Image 1: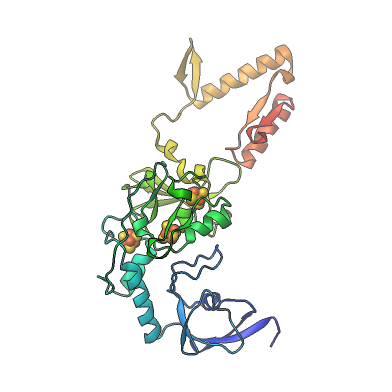
Image 2: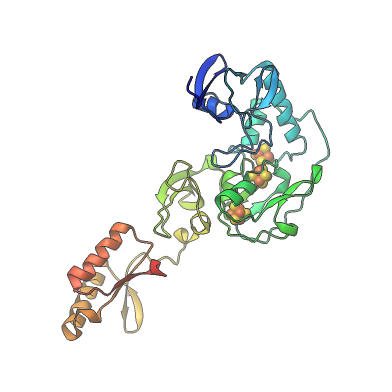
Length: 348
Ligand code: SF4
Ligand code: SF4
Ligand code: SF4
């Protein structure tokens, strides 16, 4: 045995993993599925939901917090463990609204999936319900705290990924809820990271409300047009209208977007968008073809250069263009026009 590795047995199969590996991670590496609600691969461990329990030495242990030790024998799915998991999901659902029929996340909800897996139509444990009034003044994020399962993913992503800490747990026991300081309206960077990690319909995108659930959309993979970072975006499209922006975790931006990428897509469907070049004629902007517009630009540049020299011309490029487009633009200015007067909005 190498000292930096430990050998354990999961569901009768032996595996060696580095010291410090959790049982959940070891099982995932072996392709063994263990259900989770609070765990997220990009966030630190929480150990809040208990759904990932496994059996170690006859005892139920949360696999996301249990670290592999030499010789450990783990059972991930026995009638005993599945019974406990069913009870845990039942308890989570005991104060959850029966909103699946109208919920934005139905069909894409990790809690609904577990309720389906364990056939929980009506929770056995019926208790008090938490009733919260929605009172968000912000234009981006709908926060329905009655659907919140207190998994803490949103708190962690806001702190660990975004570095903002706009939300946290407040109060104690049954009164516990996630909210901004002093229960004010959310006032943050509106990156939408919390929506991306929320396993339920507690946090959803306001601009997308009622426009289409994830199962009923066409998806288009693209690159965000806003800046040179080039984040990968998945647009959800319904009837040729972009209704939602998301990003996959296996992308260069690891699924994270900023407020522009996440919410700034309404311009795509705007009727005010320019779809053709415009040339000013007699003081009015008139639609023109590309050949006509480019011929005019070339003619004007040639005239200015002949009259006042190439340095009378300057070119301003854009961060919304690709690196290749910006390279070609400076080439055009330097080699074509003959000036080094070229700059770029990203310098701001
Ligand atoms: S959050 Fe999930 S379980 Fe709750 S109402 Fe919405 S779809 Fe149903
Ligand atoms: S939108 Fe971003 S900054 Fe605001 S609460 Fe969510 S994660 Fe935090
Ligand atoms: S709002 Fe969503 S991510 Fe945040 S704690 Fe509740 S269920 Fe978890």
